[in-house]
Image (cartoon, rainbow, N blue to C red; front, side, top):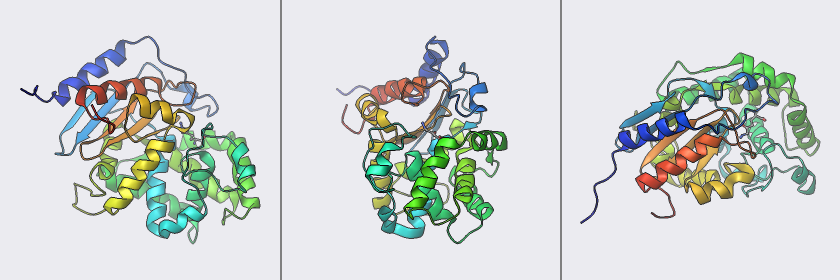
Amino acid sequence: MTSPAPDLAQVVSEIAEEMRQRPDRGDVATYIPELAKVDTNQFGIAVVDAQGNVAVGGDSEVPFSIQSISKVFTLTLALGKVGEGLWVRVGREPSGSPFNSIVQLEYEHGIPRNPFINAGAIAVTDLILSGHQPREALGEILRFMQVLADDPSITIDAAVAASEQRTRFRNSALANYMKSYGVLENPVDFTLGVYFHHCAIAMTCRQLAMAGRFLALQGRDPSTGLCIVPPERARRINAIMLTCGHYDGSGEFAYRVGLPGKSGVGGGILAVAPGKASIAVWSPGLDATGNSHLGRIALERLTKRMGWSIFGA
Ligand code: DON
């Protein structure tokens, strides 16, 4: 006798309740002053399964700053524009270093290790910007998110973008260093402007889980039936999320959660259970590697109870 499949809605609401009660919340990022104002007493979760069922819990309808989670979508757009040629400018190996690390760039001649560390995402943004004005490139990124989430109300939090722009010193260093190697084509300030603004897109867990569906469904958008990317590309983006999506916490995330995932310093995580579900969690407090503390714990609970780890039960 096999036991019945766990009830997703029940599991999600139990996880949300446990996270609401936990005293350990992690710490908000302070290097972007606007993010330091966010109340750590929040937790949201949304799961969209392959049949289109949506299960939500906690603060799933509160918009938050997606930050580095935007890098999954800019990578997808850039691959659509330049195809595999992208890998000439950016590597696809885990860095084992913090998201804003600069040390490897010098050893590796200005070529960032992967598209999810800041340097790599700035190089990817530069590819999207080429041939366009910054506002056009940004509009393209925002529209892509709106279409994937099936929600035209998604916007950019201008206060967060301005806040990061004011304290941009580390990202400016990364961008200028890459520019010196010819890895960036556009004026550094243009590329950084687009980068800060796509990181400042604000979304709810529900919107983010909707936007991630194509990665769980072999590249297909179930709302429109359109192929966003070919199945092989969806598989490869998932592979990079698994190996690089949590920076120097990627190994721990694979060990505990067992899903491709991408974190953001706003406390969100987008995770993909291939063929099964797209999942978004959010809690603003971070762990020492800059990834959502409760978000990771919640995903660990979810994959265990649903049997969704890609590594087996
Ligand atoms: O460039 C930055 O530092 C931020 N806009 C994004 C960093 C981030 O989200 C790292 N993720 N955990």
